[in-house]
Length: 285
Image 1 (cartoon, rainbow, N blue to C red):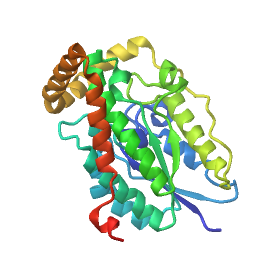
Image 2 (cartoon, one colour):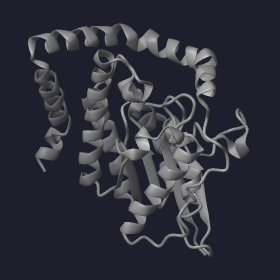
Image 3 (cartoon, one colour):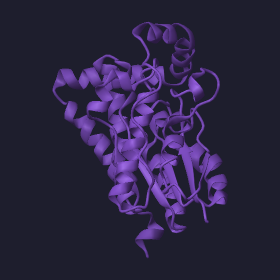
Image 4 (tube, rainbow, N blue to C red):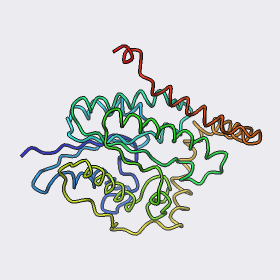
């Protein structure tokens, strides 16, 4: 019997960070993609799953390092969940993000694979940053989500809207770092992907269980993460992003004082529109 092949591409969310294997921190990650794989086919049909995702990956890494290996695997179903790390970099370029995602989605769709995509919450809100710092990041993530929505429709992808809603506000869904789902969050993410796939008429197995085996992280564990691993995480991001983010925040405050904040939103929307314009080669076909 032919196995269903499932590949996961992306960053730490797809890698499974926040959901340790067998409850052992440092012992590897399971995550929503592995949980989803268990229910992608009826019990009598085997599923082959490979996770190509790497923590810290940007869309350029998916194109340059993950795409070729995943295409060689020849998946029937492929998830491409990436983009948050792009928003946390000084070099953020929504046109480059759009071109890279278009390449990845198109490569798998051309081979007949079912492509799974998702829009995600903005990291500034998840980290609880002050408004002037959070809004520029939110604007960037909104731009990425808009691109993902449009390209998902263009390539016929199965899309999960996961950028807001009750699950985002539910603290029990998230790990101590506030950026990655904990076990409960990964389980819910997998179950929601299973549901949107089922709605397409796909022949699936049992939906992933949403009840975790482990309790959610405590407030104390969050403080411990920030004091240990979190400090290094913030320092690495600050080296690249913080100077620019401070400038963006200052610009945000100036526009707010002048009552012209809408201009920043219009500028971001115009950037998305340009990013989604067809290339000259496409326009000529």
